[in-house]
Length: 191
Ligand SMILES: [Fe+2]
Ligand SMILES: [Fe+2]
Image 1: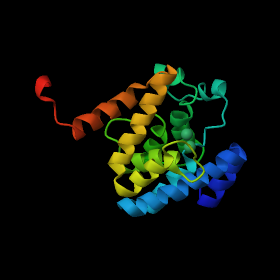
Image 2: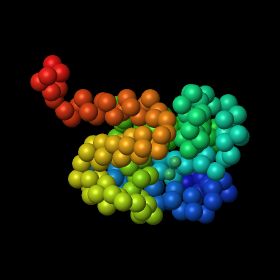
Image 3: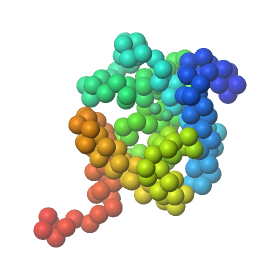
Image 4: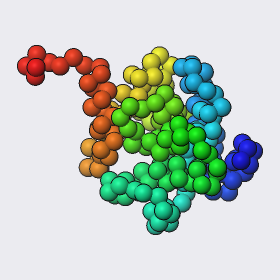
């Protein structure tokens, strides 16, 4: 399927607001790809399609044949990511596993995030339509250091969900712990 056909299909599958967000994420993903040396076409396609399953009702999404773990099933807001990877493959004809993984992990993240995973995770949160306290700090970090930006985005997500009493998906914790281990020396008393 070419980009024009994908856009036509997305327009039918998404609300206008969600479609505009998708275009915006795709553009921001290209900008980050240029900045950090990743394939711009792949970044654009992943950004464009990342929310392709966002408007599928939960009851339908969980019965499409896509394997979903307990924590994902318990978080309706997260289901569209793994289901999106499934829809992108079987309905949009995308076979590139890097793109499918970036779609699959764009909400909860995972350990060993690839550059494309980080680009889509961050483009989703910082694209120009996004407006929340701290978004400008995140945008600045995105331009300076993608790993620090990812750490900060992940930290915000963990804190937000804990404060709300929400489930933290194990992949989010694996990602967070990995970043902590990479970025911090063990404290003397913990050695
Ligand atoms: Fe999403
Ligand atoms: Fe999104």
